[in-house]
Length: 299
Image (cartoon, rainbow, N blue to C red; front, side, top):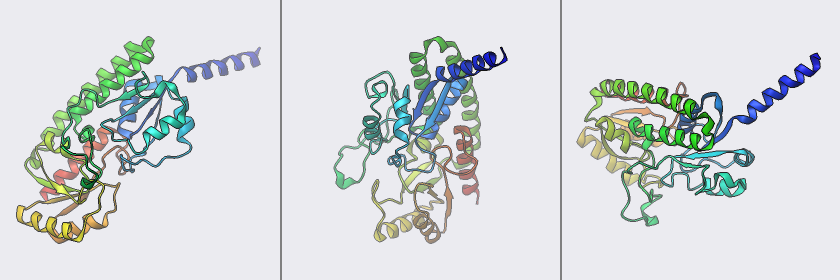
């Protein structure tokens, strides 16, 4: 009898585990949103860990079986993942998560993109053909991604609709409170100009009233030339640009050189949770970004 009860319990545990919605996300912010909405009803795996280039997450053989089992694939969209996701989707041989099917969750729906290029000529670098995809660095737009994820979970597991929507509403309320807090904290940096390595920050700059002065990259995906560095330093001095942002996805050497030559502050900012220590969640990441930027301007 005791053995029977143990076997029954093991079966119940296995059944509960199988009942979870299996979600794969491309980036760590999307994984955090999914965990907030899905709670213990979902099992979430992010392909990125937080330190990778969002446009080129290295493809690992271990990703294929994970995606083969996935009920949903959640992506940031605007072709951000074009270098790795299509090949992984094909290799997964999972019809549920192919583009156009219910398990393919594009969080960019409902987002009006910034910086849509007039030309996608490769001479202009690795341009974003549908506009800049880094909209989750604006916490107001991040709420749209949370809503898309909730809708997808409800569509897949309608029996848990009440739980998903309750979790979504609780997280959005928490995010709204933090947005108000971040706007107050960011008041000292309003109007400040900054340079970053890659074009990650237009949505963030627009939300918090900063001036996005330029990039260390010559063009998207193209390393800077000596002439570009020289011209960037000169213009930063002339316009009194106080900050260079170095994202952990890229080597620090050139941003540090530019900061030293321009006599300004270099800061390392994550573009998704996990990018630097202590930023395991989206809210922790945004806290870190705001506090670091404010501290840099006050120097």
